[in-house]
Length: 130
Image (cartoon, rainbow, N blue to C red; front, side, top):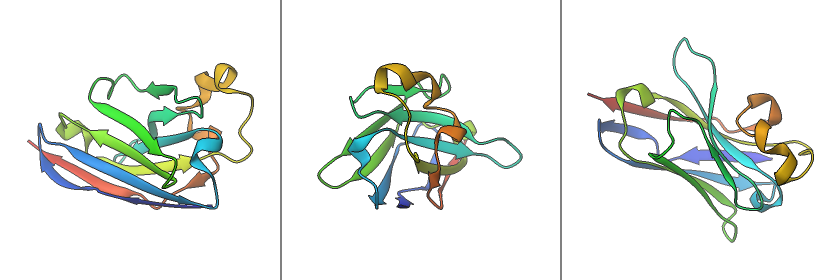
């Protein structure tokens, strides 16, 4: 499985970025995928996930501002980030599971936990200035 993020950069507060994650060796629509971020000195945080029934989960910190989506034809995961804040500054990672358990109805609670994923991209940096 190979995951390659792109689309990061530096923006001012209130701006927008759209992150992409090109997926190979895994079919994005076969189970769930997620976006995580990690700021210096902080733990990795799950911020958005999407399952194969197109249900989505968001962390409270990004709800209403970020949107996760996927293009099944291109096997690509996206994260549209609007109304960016300085506290959104972090390295952003996409992730895919190994042997995903259960079904969308039973696994929703775990989708923002890093231990639910076994495959990670190299990350793309997002920096938001005030």
